[in-house]
Length: 590
Image 1: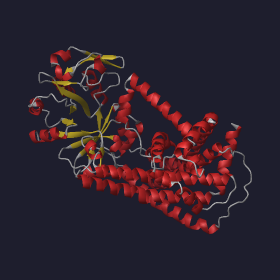
Image 2: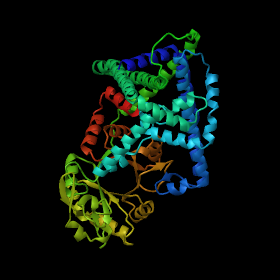
Image 3: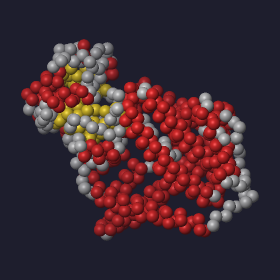
Image 4: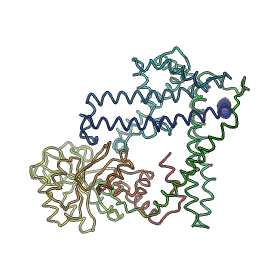
């Protein structure tokens, strides 16, 4: 712990002494990222869509899209661009830390030239090692460097939820996480070694990192844990202190709350950006100090002198950014005062305390107050509709059997179980009858297995018409062509398409889109509103996600936790304090 403290003090000292250099580097990096990397990525993607003739990319067409020669070449180009960006971004920080810790003079041009000498590695077989190395680090790097290109990279929640629903999946997930952590720790010195040592290859850097981390494993973990813990404590402390005036003014002088909230949020945004940049600088200092054994704080051989005139333009820029952010936040927060009317949709009924897609789950969801209750249906071998999600019986009954090969009568005799609860399989008729009694509407997802009868859609329409729910129910499916046909058959029925993936603008002829949360953007929300197409976001089971999309007032959120979602919507309807809204926004941004 004593050595960790020395390393931390040394890192803080160097960052303070060379603070202007770090401000320049971070400013240039962010400008390059947002003015070049992001626009170029958007332009290249639009170009790929134009050349291939697609309007947007979904799970239905992504395979054919990805194998197009032009797309392959553009993806390689983008990967190279991103790898180069990460290499230069981190390379500058590692080399600066290396020279600072040794008290050596340096110029940015010298560092630039040193990094340029190794760019040749990106046009050789070594780029494969670099790609694999960064791909392994991305899940963890997104936490360490939340403001870099890794920020939006994450595994979609519906995949992790599906994996974590089974014991085998949880074991697999835990194994993968452990392997990633081991690889991350053992390979963590590869990039600093590669950038600092002029003649070493990336492959040799990986080998050296593996050997070095073996000797300094616990020391490194301890320092990084201390670094992250201190960072979080500082963030929490600054947040508490800076939001205290807002907390007081909201209660004593409510008329000043909106402006105070906008200014407070702008201040916290700037502070958090500075803190995350500081974390990145600290990380590079700690890595170099640990790898090259320079933890002792001593007076450098020279102290850089920065003229006061360097601060004036920087102060002016910060002031302008602060004013712009404050105005934007005031406008945004003023809009957020209006109560959201997002529909709360219970996913497969209320699964807490019940088995999914059962009458019990339907009753519980209705009792909780869900606006819609989502269920899954399939057609049986005798042409009937059964409420069941999977194509096979294995997960919920423990028995072998395929839904498409069984009759409705056979299925209704089976007992299904999940999380210690048991229930029976039911028909669509059973669900509609109970739903009508409870005065709730259903969102019916039609699961397609390929053995449906030709009159599948007319039969479904006739059933909904017979129960007089055609105008109040919703039907969705992941088969766009089938939903287009259904809309033509029943113009009054609310018809939607389910997408697990979407990149690009959407232009559909249905009433609503159900999209996995990872692919929902503000631009897409605005585009769909303009087209008067509703958007349902699935499957939101995290407090943060529910807060975000209810605040954005999407048309519906599909969740396993309707009670939590209803509580969040109620609080926002009651016009919760601006302080709570700010804390929610800070969660989304960082």
